[in-house]
Amino acid sequence: FVFHDVPEGIYLLEVLSTTHHFSQMKLRVTNETVKALEFKYPGAAKEGATYPLKLSAHGPLHYFAKREGFNVMSIVANPMMIPVLMSGVMIFIMPKMMSGMDEEQRKEMEEQMKNQDPQNM
Image: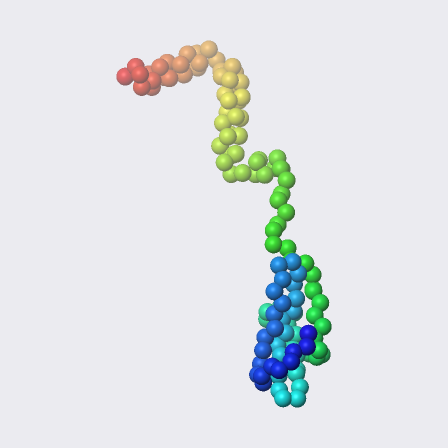
């Protein structure tokens, strides 16, 4: 870039691009000279640049993150799966526990369950 008929002062040059990243340039314009400082990104250390300016892109800009694919482990790692898995385990274990009980214990348990039934109260 070459600038003509610019008043004295300090200017900030930014290239606005939706596809690539460019450095910011700080220009100090006096009657006789133009001094340029290059900032790779805001807050970066300044570097001297030559005039006329030759700007090149540092790289493409990435606005979007790539969507993750389906993963079975993400479903299993969900905290809501803990109650679901516990219920499933109990459905399979309880009948096996009941079959291992004595007949007397089973009858006592059935009687207790009948006494606790809210419909019979």
